[in-house]
Image (cartoon, rainbow, N blue to C red; front, side, top):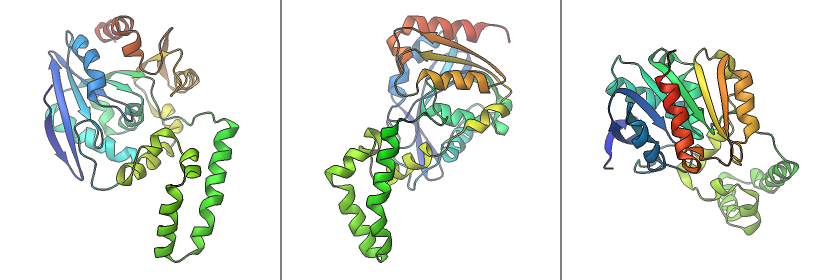
Amino acid sequence: MTPTFFDYGSGKLAWYKTGSGKPLLILHGWGSSSAVMTPLAEKLGRLRTCYMIDFPGFGQSPEPSEPWAVDDYAGAVKAFTKEFFKDNSYDLLVHSYGGRVALKLLTSDEAKSIDKVIFTGAAGLKPKRKLSFYFKKYTAKTLKFPFSLLPEASREKGLNRLRNTTLWKKLGSSDYQQLSGVMRETFVKSVTEYLDPLLAQIDHEVLLIWGRDDASTTLDQGERMDTGLKNSALIVIDGAGHYAFLDKPAHFTAIAESYLTSEK
């Protein structure tokens, strides 16, 4: 699919459209793009006009000119919907990082424009951490501390050398290691903001679809979302992981279609 572009502040969004009917906005996860969501969008295009956005820094969208937080991505989505949906309501389907953005949308004035909501493998809650995580975290802090005592120019030079060492690379997550510059800072801003308190503020009905074997946003996070939301249902798909819509496409599509066509 050939993208169209939408300018927003310090970012530029590549977006795609397929299908017909009421708008369905589909938001992808971190390190992914609309390309991953396209097979699902083409199936749901029987029921909806599916709009897919490449978040800035992913897919065909260039990196933002400065580091973004989740609020910046949510702001870009709001501007997009205002431009292309006008005053029409739309449905929302989000995966992984898109869940962070959706939680912001559903607790803002944008919520009034959103009807049905589907979360799959959605991120945003504070994950349960293993002891190894805290070991790496505090080891990294210990390694960085001596550089904080140096003048700024020497501090940055020393930190850059540290970041290129084998030890430092072992301490970071695989997502973090693959990033640099603006997107590295964007990643840190995003994953260190825990959105658990927003769940109780959401009045929308939310369908949660989770792969039982999801290793990225584990099933316990789906269960916690289900508990924290006022009006939700959790469906678990066996034999599926973080990309349940790719692992079990027919099963996932049948669930999504049934929900989208049901009466509220």
